[in-house]
Length: 79
Image (cartoon, rainbow, N blue to C red; front, side, top):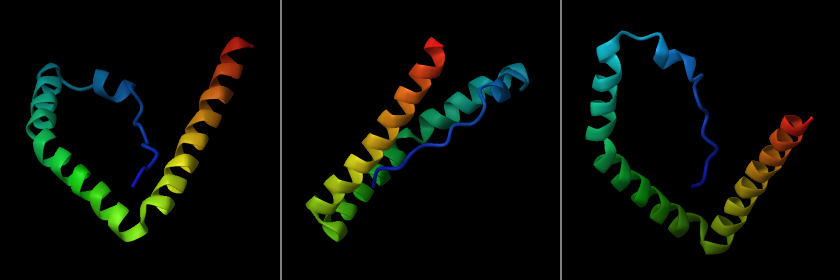
């Protein structure tokens, strides 16, 4: 199911010790394949449970919400 991601503040990674970034990148790289499989199976299962029409409506709501916030950010940047 589509979800809005919550991003952590970017300054957190700059305060960590120097080798931590490479170790964290390696951990993320190692978890990529299982994450891709779970992500795919979750989407397939959601379509089977909710049906294509409800999934399309849910996706449309998420995209509209993201577009609304993108436009609001663009307006504040131009002021």
